[in-house]
Structure formats: structure tokens, C-alpha cells
Amino acid sequence: MRISVSRVTLQEKAYHALRSAVINRRFPTGTKLVVRALSERLDLSPTPIKGALAALEREGLVTAVPHRGYFVRRISARDIEEIYALREVVDGLAARLCATLADDRVLLRLRALLARQRACIRTGDFEKYGDLDLAFHRCIRDASGNSRLVRAAEAYDGQVRLLIDASTRARTLPTSIQEHKVVAEAIGTRNASAAEAAMRRHVREAGRALRERLLRHADAQRISM
Image 1 (cartoon, rainbow, N blue to C red):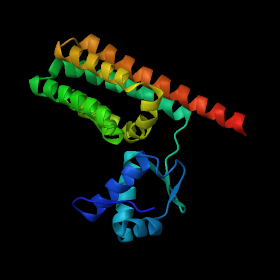
Image 2 (image 1 turned 90 degrees about the vertical axis):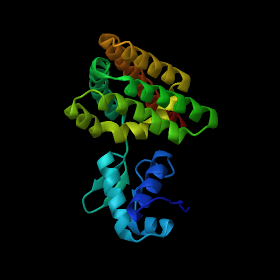
Image 3 (image 1 turned 120 degrees about the vertical axis):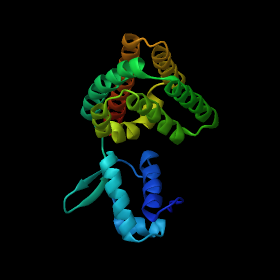
Image 4 (image 1 turned 45 degrees about the horizontal axis):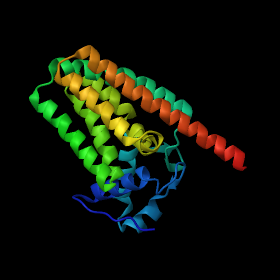
């Protein structure tokens, strides 16, 4: 299997190609990412590959194991529980703060992101949909005026992005977008309490659906064994 690459620097080329492959499950969870093999697939030297893998580790998409190399991150039901419990609090607070500070530029940005997500559903571009889903949350955090909150969210964003594909299967996309719409409307009316409540409900429901899907998948595997 060869992975197509494009873009500015060699490391960026490697990063974008490998990130897309991981997110789209072309490398299943737990897969060891061997630098030499990736170099051959991408027709690049090992140096940009190593840089890209280090960037993916910082993003939470791969795990570095000392003396063994890099592996596609495996996320458990416990991981989901911890990530989404933290995400509910952080993103809920971000929505509350954003509602008190957001200007028209932020509101226009949120509406534009929702429109682009709907377009991705129509065209079936679910990788782009996932990136836009995360961009919606980041837009709200960036407008919260709290730089520490933004940095806290960076600790789980990569893992959330890895889960978004499963989340879209666990819940219908129109439901997720409608929840985003409710959050954006609460921010637009400067209703801080409603914005926080809507965001927390959205994140909580997404986490619940993911855990249920993971448990169903585990049950199905046990039955087939």
C-alpha cells in the first residue's frame, strides 16, 4: 500500500499522509509504524518520517514505546470515560466563557463551520467532517479568553479526533450537528449558562455513545470467538 503525499515541507508531507492514514484506520489500532517501511511507502528519507511520528505522538494519535518504536494508539472504554469526563468540563467552561466574550466574528466562524460540516455530509467527506467537528470546539475554546483552558484541551484533542470516526457511526451526524447548532445559538444570544449546559450535554452524549459502541464491539468479538 502506498500513501499519497502533497504540501509544503517534507515533514509536513509525511505528517499529513500519516495522520490521514491513522485517522481513517488504514493502520489499525496497535499497528507498529516502522520508519523504514513508511519511508518506502512515502518515498521520503527517515528524517521527516521520524519528525512526523513525533508530531503525531504529541497529538495523541500514536504512542512511543521505548526501544520498540511507534504504535497507533489503542483507546479503551476507560480512556473514553476519562477523556470525555475531562472534555465535558473543559469544553463546557469554554462555551460559558465564549458566550460572555464572543464577538460577531466568532459567531460567523461558528456558523461557517456548521455549514461546511453539512456540506461534508452531503459529499461523504467524513475525514474533513471530523476535522471541522474539532475545529468547531477549538473555535469556542480560542474565544474563551483562557489560554490555560486551551492548553488543557490540547492534551486530549488528538485522541478525540481519533475517536470522531467511531463517534459518527455511534450517533447520527444530524444529531451531532443539531447539538452544535444549539451551542452556537446559546453563544449568539450571550446566554452563558445555556451555552455551557448545551455543550456539556453534547459532549456527554458523544462519550456515552462511544462507550456503548466499544462495549458492543467487544461483546461481538467474544461471541464470535
